[in-house]
Each structure stands twice: as structure tokens, then as C-alpha cells.
Image (cartoon, rainbow, N blue to C red):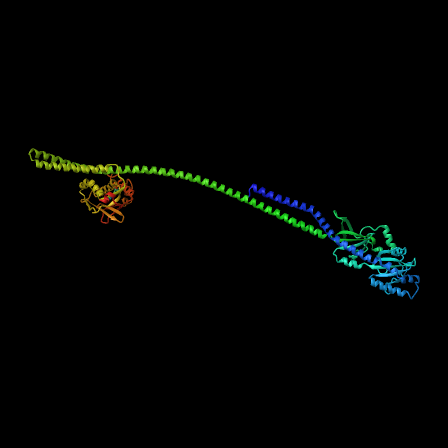
Length: 618
Ligand code: ADP
């Protein structure tokens, strides 16, 4: 999730990239012309050697021919022919000699002119374009030689239509100049060599006319203005065809920081840029220039800039990628931080909720503990109330129980008194022993009552069932006897230990026997059966009667508090409910059922347990 900070960083990155590109473009725009110029100068430097070589070759070629006319002029045959031009015996001889010489010297033409400029003998005498009979008085080399000097000239041959270089020397007859001998060489061979050099080589004369060039279309074109006198001289000497003298569509600029020139030629064929440098052949009045295409400099400059640009671009892009990664990292870290904060907030919320729930739970537990304590208290009070109710029910029988021994005590006491009066001590003693027995019996009943009525202090633990049942029977004996009921009970031979509380279990049994008696109050021969057995890990105590059994209502609700079918004053409906809770407290069960042969059966089911260690040892 991009934040304001990372958005800003991204924007800044974009701006810096654009800025860097702009700076790069500007640097390139500034650097390109300089670089191109440097490479152009390089090209010029490379061409310099070629230029020097070409100049020397041309200069050498000319120098080699330069001396030939003077040497030829010394031949006596030439002066002899000049003296006697009509000598038909001599002329063919001279012609042939000149032809032989031209061949052996490797020059184009050798020819002999009389003082008027008329050619009287020539090496080309046998050819169609023979010079013989032609007059070259208009050529400067002729006039120069006739004046006694060395004549030299370059021109397009008027006869041969070939560009050539002419040298001429006077032919002396004694001390007088009798004529002129001229040697012509062609220069095509130089051009052929130059064409192989790759560069364009041109030779201009002092009037800026291109006389030689390996580019044939440039012949007689001009590179620069032709001076007025120059033009007149050309016309006068018929050096070049005037019509061919057209300027090349070229612009010339100095190449700054170098002795070279940039020549831009623009014609229908397109635009051409060349780097030019010029050397001088002073003696011949010629300038030799070499022109190389400038485009390799352009290509090289572009290459260098492209490579540099790519490198710089690569570096910038690399930096941008690293920066971008950094931004992404920052974004991720921030997202993680946000997520963590969110999680922490959620945890805090949850913790708060949990704390609240915990507090509520604690409160509920406290409430429950309080309620339970209250319940226990109420239950204990109910148990107590139940016991007192049972006692109340027994009160009539109890009063009978006490009255009967009391009456007997009274009778025995009176008897004892009478026996004492009659000095019959033995009989008196017997009666007193009986009185004591009666007192013991009443004390026993009273002890049971006290134990029963006492608030239960008994702890839950191992309890022997046989004495508990015996105590309950003892407690109920007055009522049983009052009802004339028979109790069938065969205690097991081995003690049965259960988990429970002695007094409370006793209370349960008293309740069950009491209920059984109540159920059979109209029966003539009430009978209650007690059985104590073991089933698996449980102890079963069953109290059954021969009464009417339990109604459906009673079967369903007998254990509910305050459920009773007895008339007011005789039952509270608490006995079974209390008993049920007591048994349940000992992890036991209390069940009610009807017997098939009639009557109800109540079953107390309790956990068997081991006797306490001391009793077990006995
Ligand atoms: P109370 O004895 O005060 O009525 P109990 O809780 O001891 O209260 O008994 C509830 C009811 O269960 C009795 O009113 C009676 O209807 C029924 N009941 C208990 N024991 C027997 C029994 N042995 N035979 C028939 N009905 C019984």
C-alpha cells in the first residue's frame, strides 16, 4: 500500500529520471559537434600521408620529363631539318626517330616546330591525329621555349583531346634558335592510381580549375572563382574548353583547429561532405588536394555517443531500479508496520473483551459459589427440618415407648418396696435389676434420638452399612412395634463399607421405613423387608413394603420437594426429596419402583469402598 512518503519518492524518482535524460540529451547535443570535428581532424591526419605521396609521385613524374626536350634539342638531325625543312630525304628520318624516342621514353608525343610554331616533324606522323602541319604558336610552352627558356604547360590537347603536360626547349642552330622541340605526357595514369586510394584526389591550377581528378565528372570544373585574367589566358592559350568551366556546387569552410577544410557539395544527386587538404607543386603551378568523405567521422561520433549514452543510461537505469527497490522495500516495511499495528489493536480489543468476559465469569462463579453455599445451608436446614418432622411423626410412638417402661419401672419399684417390707430381699433385688434394665433401654432410645436430632457433623467417608441399618431399626422400633409391623432383615455376614455419612444414611433409612409404615397403616399384618447386597462396585439397600405402591403421579414426582399424598399435618413432602439429595451427595442413587407382587420398593445405591486402615488391620 503506497503511502504519501513513497508516492513522493516515486514522483521524485520520475522527475530525476526525466531530468537525467534531459541533461544527457543536452550533453550529447553539445558534445556531438566537437566529437565529430575531432574525428574529422583524425581523417584529415590520416589523409596527410596519402596527400604527400600523391604530390611526390606527380612531382617526380613531371620532373622526369622536364629535362627531356633539352636533351632531344641537342640532336643535330633536328637542327638540320629546321635548316632545310623541305628536305624530303631527312624528314621521314626525323619523324621516325621522334617516334622511336617517344616509344622508348614512354612519353605521349615528341614534336618539332619551326619558329612560326608550325609542326614539321612529330612522333605521331603516322597516325590519324598527326601533329605534323599543325601550328602551336598559341601555346605558352612554345613562346617560352622560343624565348630561350624551358617551356611548360598543361592543357587539353587540341589535336588529341587528351589532357597532357607539355615541356618544350629551343633547338639551336649554332647560337640561333631555329625551332622548338616539345614533349607531351599524358596524366591519366596518375588518376588511375589515385582511384585506388579510396579518397578523391584533385589537381587544380592557379585559376582554381580542376585539371586532374579520379572523378572524371569533375574535370575542368572549378572549386573557387576563376580570376578574370586567368579566364582570358585560358581562352588565348586554348588551355581548356571554356564551356566546360563550371563551378562545382560546393561550399568551403575551414575545419576549426586544423589546416583542413570542409567541402560540402550539394547537387541533384544529393549532399556530400568531404574533408579537404591541399599541397602545392610550385614548379608546375599546380595544387594537389585530397578529399575524404566526412561521414565516417559522423558515424564514429554517433557510435561513441551512443555507447557512452547507453553506458550512462544503463547506470541511471541501474540506479533507478535500486531506488525503486528501496521504495518498494520501504512500502513493504510500512505495510508490515501497519498490519502489525492493526493486529496489536485487534489483540488489545480481544484482550479487553476477554478481560471483560473473565470478570463476568468470575462474578458468575462467585454468585454460583454463594448460591451453592446458600443452597447447602438451606438443604442442611431442610434435612434438619425433615429429621424433626420424622421425630414429630414418631412422637406418639416415642411417648408410648417411654410410658411403657416408665409404667413397668413404677410397677417394679412398687413390687420391690413390697418385697423389702416383707424382708424378701432376693425378690426385691430382682425387681431393682429389672428397673435398671428398663432405665438402660430408655437411655438407649434417648441416645438414638439425640444422635438423630443433632445437626449433622458427620464427614463423608467409609461407613459400615450393618451398624447404620441396625441403628435406624433401633430408632424405628417403637413405631414398628406400635404398628404391629414385622421387619424382615437378614444382615450379611461380612461388613459392607460404602462412601457416605453415618447419620445422614441413617436418616435416609429411617425415612424409607417411616414411609413404608405410612403406606401400610391400614394393613392388618404390615411387613417391611430390608435387603443389603453387593452388585459389582455398588452396594444395594432395598426397602420394600406390602402397601399399595406408588401412583403414577407419585412415581413421577416422589422425589420433588413438597410432593405428598398425605393429609395435612401428616406429611410435608420433604422426606424423599431430602433423602434423594443425601444419596446423590455420596455419588449414589435413590430409585423408586413398584413390586410385581404389590407394594413399593426403594433402592439406595452407593459406591463400595475399603474400610479405614485401622479397622481393616483388625
Ligand atoms: P411425606 O411422607 O411427607 O408425604 P415423602 O417425600 O416421604 O413425604 O413422600 C412423598 C410421597 O411419596 C408420599 O406422600 C407418598 O405418596 C409417596 N410414598 C412414599 N413412600 C411410599 C411407599 N412406601 N408406598 C407408597 N407411597 C409412598
